[in-house]
Image 1: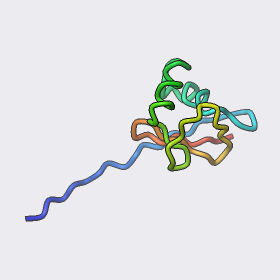
Image 2 (image 1 turned 180 degrees about the vertical axis):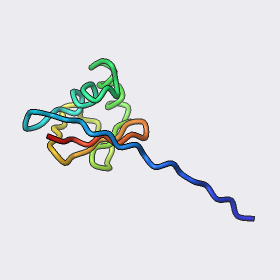
Image 3 (image 1 turned 90 degrees about the vertical axis):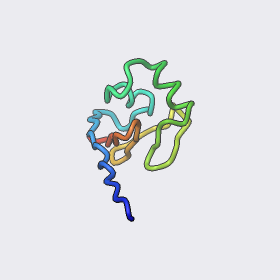
Image 4 (image 1 turned 135 degrees about the horizontal axis):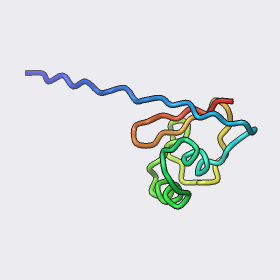
Length: 80
């Protein structure tokens, strides 16, 4: 007997910036994915955030328009 599993699509959320780039920790706060900078620091250090599909442990990682980051099955897209 085969079991079919339907995996829910990941939610996509735009994150609007007005500058050339934004640091990953600031983007997490701006998008309301986390409520504090300290919380952003810990989830990044715990390898819970992906940037453009790859785990990123650098909270100072600069994100530009077109980049995306993922946290808790939500994909946040950087837009201007």
